[in-house]
Length: 436
Ligand code: S3P
Picture 1 (tube, rainbow, N blue to C red):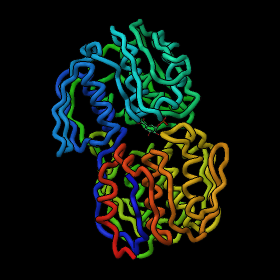
Picture 2 (cartoon, protein in one colour):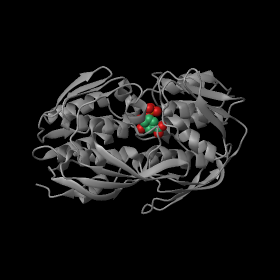
Picture 3 (cartoon, rainbow, N blue to C red):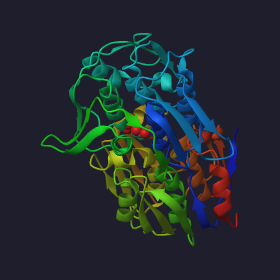
Picture 4 (tube, rainbow, N blue to C red):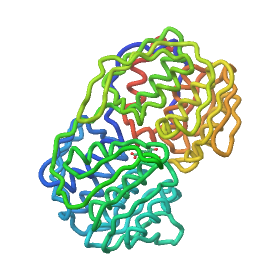
């Protein structure tokens, strides 16, 4: 399905973004391996999170869910309560499902095969296969190419101390989850802290987990032995989804948007830091804690922006926002340099290439770099035909770009927004004023 976006005058109003994707996935997974019920409120009912639910259904877990409500009840069966799957586990488009569930499956007394869609079949899995093998797991890539399908068979797991070569929450979480089934302590160290939802939520479920700074970086450690207990989780709104409205309101003159109930865990707020550096006006109001996670309302007013430089220290905290930050940069005065972001090449699409090509199609001056891009901002953009490349974040970022460009834009295969934000276009329309 193609989506046509016309230029807008401004964005005004209040919006509530859907629940955080990373937190929704984890609540399902940890609920499944906990004893008793877990009630998840403001769950993200998007394709990715539904892939996680369907994998656990195949592993014998029952869920109570209503397609019209964002509440899910997970009837957990304890650490050793999963049963052998009735067929191949299908992670769909979801890297988080694939990598986190692999850690859980490595500790099970049955074999399973994990697969996904064409995009997930191209994403690197060596990053989880290697540490799981070090733990003694029996895991192999069925086609011997370090991609899914993966076959995971029973084995005895040992605790390891792992220095992660990439700051990846999916890798860290996979290892910590396998650590629940190991014979001793498991630690993961990363030089820059990646999102820490696993550490926070496993602790809320009663796991024996600790984290802190060491000489080498940021370490998270888990001890096996504790059963997890079901708990109630209220999922804050996803800052990665809020990012599209933040960007649109900043670049469209006369805009004022209130985004309610957004998760502002500091491992996720790199976009707020970058926006502040660019001169963007985002006020953080009503700060509070929700289910162990920081949340707030964000008031965004249109601002005149300047280019900036973004490097290694910030990349993990804004990794999924880089396509929309590139859009901001295209409307900012001067040059923006994004470096140390080669991880973008192995996301749902090669996001350095797909972002650069999509922006170029609208007249932006963007140069691809091996590990990022350089954007010369301030050149007026025109509408056109834009490939989403079936990547939800490219589709939504380019919708924002289209609002502030001249003439209509067609975004191809825009239904991929359903991966993380099924009501995105409706919510955007509700805020858009005076389409020209
Ligand atoms: C996620 C971690 C990030 C992020 C992804 C969600 C998670 O991936 O890009 O969208 O939920 O742990 P990496 O761990 O590969 O950086």
